Image (cartoon, rainbow, N blue to C red; front, side, top):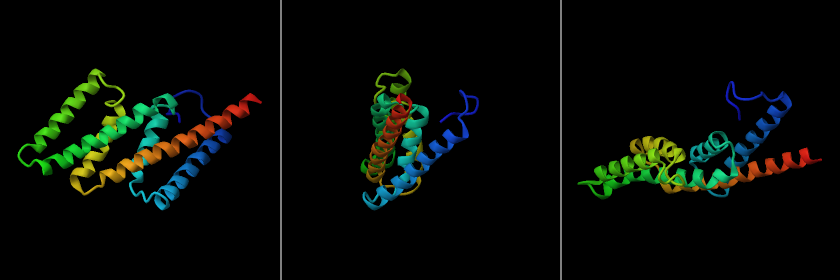
Length: 168
């Protein structure tokens, strides 16, 4: 999905085809995830899909870092929410220390499979509501993993379709 000023624009036909796939994927994942998997935190699934498809350009090789980073971000958000309750004397300081060390590791690119832009995005997005209201971080994790699998399958199917159409 292109930003303003990025590359050549799509024809209306191709734009509508991509739009149709995106709408189908959103509706299908909402129905499948809600009915079959009882997921409610769709924002996490859609955030992962948006991140991978836009920032990582849907690169299948970037799925491990995108997914592991998202889960590490949720883990860091859990630390900010959960550690103060588990360790009232020092839990907040421990959680803040973990986040600060994670930030340094990400800046230095020492562990890019886990501490990357995906991790920082999910830390930021999940931590804010987690600190203000109750969130089920296990359910959010299921939503991210389920969304990653679903959106990867849709993207791979679209990739195979385009490859078959251009080969013949």
